[in-house]
Amino acid sequence: MGKVLLGIVLGVILVPAAVLVWFQFGKVPVAVADPPFPQEQLLTAVPLHARIDRDLIKTAPIQSDEATTRPARPTGRSPMASASPACHRIRKS
Figure (cartoon, rainbow, N blue to C red):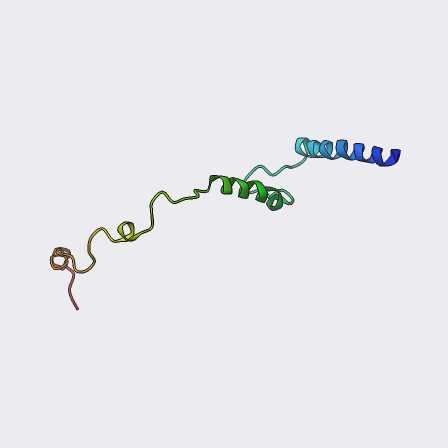
């Protein structure tokens, strides 16, 4: 039982110490061009998704109905459509 307890204590102490030594003396990726951390996708996915879920707007600020989705002006031919080719010198073919 003593060896198991000693192994757990050493593991709890040595793993963080090894990470600190790696941060202090190792080549830690800090620039955009550097390769990513080992298992970075795995480590960052959980907090990223938690932040997105927390900041997500649950209800839309505007309703999706006919009044908010209709166009501002009626579709069809604009009153300026006949003057546009003359003003911009576009030939009809």
